[in-house]
Length: 303
Image (cartoon, rainbow, N blue to C red; front, side, top):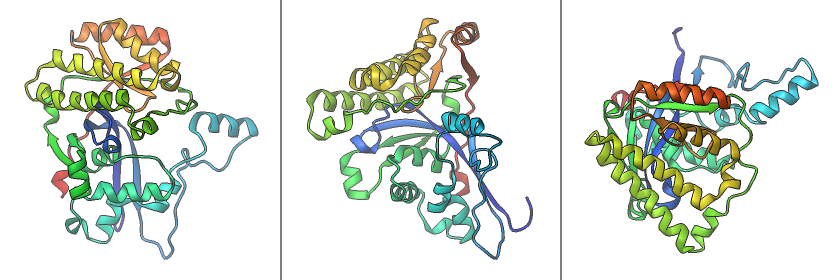
């Protein structure tokens, strides 16, 4: 790296189990996925300049068709507005304050910047990206009210079995149908409240299953996680493409659930490589991409 440059990479996040996040005072197990990432570089300059990414923040187009195709596949937003709000790891090093800001507080800083932009988000993604690796998170109301953050427990990534990612090369927008789940939860809907609590319990049971390497139990919990989510949100909200990805995995006997709120599926093949081969064949027929999951190492060694 050139002298004076500060560079950090932020990886994608997979919600393995749980996934109600802090919004519902839940529990979740997540890990950082090194298959996909975003990189931020700070370099010395007399001015504060935010340089658009040549692909993801494209502002020059060869034709109107090029513009239309770009917006249909990537949407209107890139990374510039996020950089204008915050680029935490680089700034911690630039101002030499990494040791002065506790790691459990850093996700809140990122979240506050996103809220400034009107982005609806929770702490789960920020915790996974700040901590890296595999993390068990508890967002009980007691912890959130008392501490302002959850309790985050890093776990050994080597405890996980081989996992696979399934996704569509050109996914359709998964947010076309508005979900009423959050409002129903706020309104005291008994079904939503009890089901969310059960989803949170899946993360607690999943932590034990992972520590004991009880992978048949892990598969059961993953499938249950998606089924509960589907019962709350309904097929119109979840989307036909997302359901087809889950069903493609289940058709060959694999466990599957969303990596987050949709767009990709995390899959566990308990019967090994022969089942992975069947998964690849089934997904190829359905037009989906399959690739082995690469879990990013924990960031905690950096402080």
